[in-house]
Length: 111
Image 1: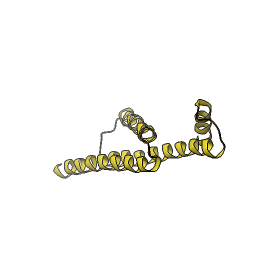
Image 2 (image 1 turned 90 degrees about the horizontal axis):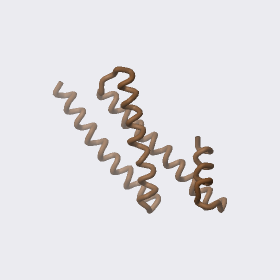
Image 3 (image 1 turned 45 degrees about the vertical axis):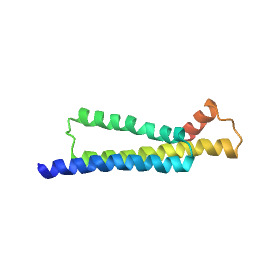
């Protein structure tokens, strides 16, 4: 029991560190906090969905579930990065305006 609590604390701490590092990498890549926050804003939404899935399935929060949350965070961040990059490519390479239609097109193409 003690080892499981220690592992849960370690994973929690490492998760916070990894989120901070992901934000720093995104900020250095895009040179703006708003685009980095757009990508990072998807992470809590994905985690809410995964907690709801655990609750619906009747499962407890375990170390394996926490590792899954970390994996989900990486996948969510990657998908956000790909969407932002696609929008920027449409704006810079194809000369489209940065508006709702371009954002919608990019999101639909990435889906």
